[in-house]
Length: 421
Image (cartoon, rainbow, N blue to C red; front, top):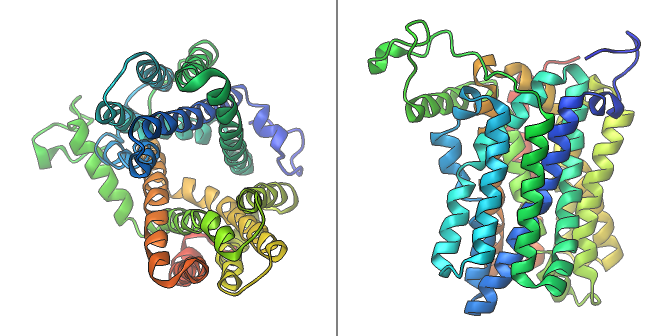
C-alpha cells in the first residue's frame, strides 16, 4: 500500500486506509457479533426446552468442533473460488440457518446438526478472508491489520454477549435469532456491494497429477477438492517452518481458553464477591486488548518478533500463583498480565505469511482457523477434567505450566522460523 514517507512506521490508520480491508474488517466484526448472539440464543433455547446443561453447552460447541472437517477436507476452496461470492454466500448461508432456527420448531438434534453443518464452511470463508487481508496489506501494515481484527473480534464477542442478553430478555429467543439473521444479511450485502470481485488464487504450478491420474494445472485439470485439500493440509503440517508457527498460535490459546473456562468456579471456590467472575474474565480480555494495542503502536516489527518467545511465556507465568490463595485484586492483576502476553501473536504474523506457499494461503489461513477453534473447544474440556481431580486453583496453574512447556519446546523451532532482525 502507498506510504507517505519511506521512514515512517505503518500505523493502524494505514491498514484502515485500505478500502478492501475496511470492508472485510467491518463485515467480519458484524458477523462475529451475530455468531455470539446466535450461540447465546440457541443455548438458551436448548436449555429451556431440555433443562440439560450438557445440551446447552453442546449448542456452543456445535459451532466450533465441526470446523475440523471443513478445514481439512474442503480448505482448498478458499483458494479455488473468487472471494467475493464465497464470503458473501457464506454470510447469507449463516443468515438462512439463523432464520431456520428462529422460525422452524426444529427438534434439538436437528438444530444442533444444522449449526454443525454450517460450521463446516467456516474455515473456508475465514481462509478466503484472511488470504485477501494478506494480499491487500503488506509488511507491517498486514501485522497491524491482523491486530485490529483480533481486537475487534474480542470487542464483538463482548458486545454480542452483552447485547445478546438484552435481546433475549427483550425480544425473546426467537427474536434474538431474527436479529442475528439481520446482522448476517447486512454483512453479506456489504461484501456483495463494496468488495471488488477479485480473482481466486493462482492454481499450483504442479499439483502432483501423476499421483492421482489427473493432468495437474498445466493440463487444465485439478485434483478433486478433497484430495487437493488433504494434500495441502499434509504439506502445511509437515513443513518444518510452517508447523511450529501453527502450533505456536494454536496451543497457548487453547490452554488460555482452558484457564478462562475455570474462572467462574475459581471465584466461587475462593469465596469472592458476586460479579467477581465476570471481572476476572474481563481482565483476561482487557489484557489482550491492551497488549495488542501496546505492541502494535509502541514496538517496532523487529522488537515484536524478538519478544515473541518471552511474551508467549508471559501468557502462562502469571497463572502459576493462582494455585495459592491470592486475593481477588491480585488474581485480577495476574489475569490482566497473562492477557497482555497474547500480543506474542503479532510477532508471528509476518513470518507466518512469508512461510506460506502463495498458491495455498487461503487454505493455510483456513487451517489456522480450524486449529484455533477446535483446540479452543478441547482446551476447556481438558483443563476442566483436570480440575475434577486436583481442584480449580492447581488446574489453573497447570494450564500455565503447559503454556510454559509449549513455549520451551517450540523455542528452538521458532528461533529458526523467525529470523533475528
